[in-house]
Image (tube, rainbow, N blue to C red):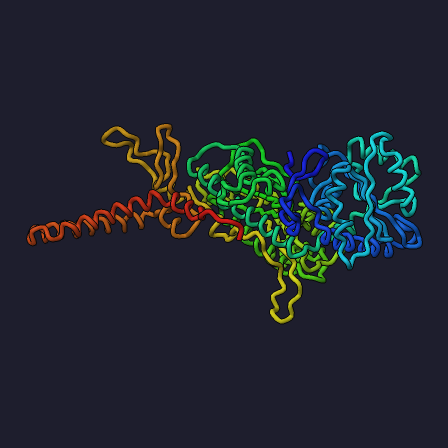
Length: 606
């Protein structure tokens, strides 16, 4: 259930701190609509819709042939619909709040009419009382009338509308409730039709101002920390302990952290944050790169793991996807590295003036240049989308047909992946049969990040997009090894032990087994130094035995010297013993220490 904010007749719910009027005398009794922001944004919408209408040709899809038009946006009941309905998004963009059961009409003659309740009119009154001097918008209000089911109000609205075809933003007719049904009935009775004008509205809303950028950066910070302090530690603990935990359970764990930011060391009001979507965790050869994908009830498989997380802060979105590889064969890591190269190439063309279609075309061209044309068919058709108040704007998709041009200060999620790459027996040579990845017959890899399109800067020459989501995707940081072929070959037992315990346990070297025989691996590591500790060859063991023999000889010499000097070196020996114990603990505790690198101190937003 969504936690996004709305205003109804019985309660005022605050959503954005900037909406509080700092000039108001005395305590603030409720939310305040930002009048200058409304007038600026509404004027931008009128300008863009007018351009869209002028370029539409004849006959006009809405409005009159003389260039006049009206757009009608009806928002249904508060219990209906989605946070991503365009009517909700437009309310948040103009008012800072969703206003259920409200009709908004915007016309080419710069007249704005709002039909709503008395309580909401009080909230919106500043649009008249505090109209900026440079604004020529005329804002008027109509108060809802239950007595006639708003028939007279609807009639007045239609009488002032231009043309028999009104623009609107609900082509699927999803608005519900008595109020929305009454408006639909009034339209039919008056012989009016509707035409979708989502495209020009999306284009205006896609270009973010400075305050929107800062809010989206905070959403990205939250997304980053959710990965580092919630998902990654959870994933690692499940792998390290060899537990069976479902993808759904891990997704629930991550979503709980989004709903309560204190779990990831962020001091922000929980009411300001929510998920863009339920986190998506996938592994085990069953993958979907669609935005509609869902976490399954099957247990996490320790092979190729794809995680997608999105967070909203004050209704603005950020999203990120990462791939983690456990005991991967060379084909998997090479394919992942290639994917990151393709992402970098695509990112480089996300500049003002380039068409959105260039992104996918660049991905295809890069694969061909690198001799991997076979992966083109495994690319999604859409490689991302514009985002902001809307998680995924369907008008601004990064496909190979979209002619819309990138503009400075747009924000996009660039989402790439290869789905169901075949994995043959030859590809798995050298992989331990104990490794989950050995059971895969196909795999997928994906990466996604949130970027702001920078304005062209001739002086600096740095015109590439600004990255908001900064969790690492470096190959050395997303690869884990817990089973190796070398380990299997060196783990043969001599048939038992003197005390009757089984020295031929299946637990890999460098791990401990609990009473149930389950693995408690200290070998899960993502950096090269840690891998060197956990993947031990026969040569390394022989070298360690030589070091141990040398240390014993040195200890015997110290004991002889101490006896000769009357115990003067007693303190030195004690310190050396502590060092040996520390090194033993270091090896056993490597996994815990590596996890600790993810744990940062409590922090406010940067």
